[in-house]
Image 1 (cartoon, rainbow, N blue to C red):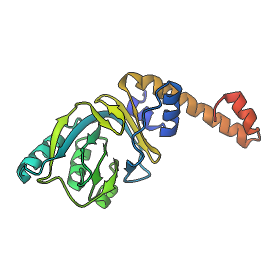
Image 2 (cartoon, rainbow, N blue to C red; image 1 turned 30 degrees about the horizontal axis):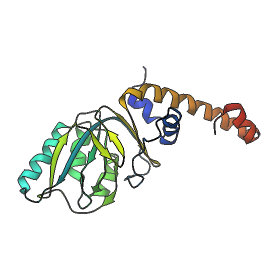
Image 3 (tube, helix red, strand yellow; image 1 turned 180 degrees about the vertical axis):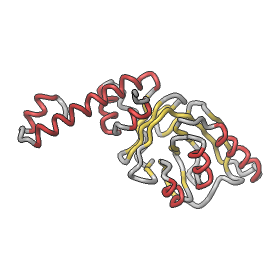
Amino acid sequence: MAKSMTERLAACYTGAVYDVMRETGYPNCVLPHEIRPLDDSKTLAGPIWTCSGRIDESISDDESLMGWTGLLSAAPAGTVLVCQPNDSTIAHMGELSAETLNHRGVLGYVVDGGNRDSEFIRKLGWPVFFRYFTPKDVVGKWKVESMGEPIVIGDIDISSGDWILADIDGVVVIPQSMIDSVVTRTEEIMSTESELRTMILNGMDPKEAYKKYRLF
């Protein structure tokens, strides 16, 4: 059976995808390096579904939780939820939310913000990429503003339907229109890298290897 695009992208690594994006003339594709994995061993890949919000201390606990649970309900299975919280003070993911999204088939979460209940989520094995830890949560503090609409993280424009690959090295965003060509070219490069590695380990001079493969 042919692999899905999500499976093919998950078999790649961010360094190779970035090299292809740079080769294609699209090097501005990496999210800020402060966004790190909760578990360094996890790779996260898939189509993006976006959301955003902001601090609003005028809302009630109930209003904030109605908005948040509405977001959990709306996130489509088979996507990576990517959030711009416009905030650096509270956590925008926690244990019960992670378990809910995982159970509903959401592949993982990338947020330009905070995380809590981190040991529980790590044990769950659900990939989360985030900027900082804090025990503070969204209750009575944070309001969902958009779902599925374009967002910006760092200087990267992100739309639902774009694709994401995240691993220990960082997070790369691939525009929807480029996903097939980028993954196909990345697979080619990874295959060539394996051949080049074998040649070097068998004694080929690295400069001669580069001249032969034009890759290193």
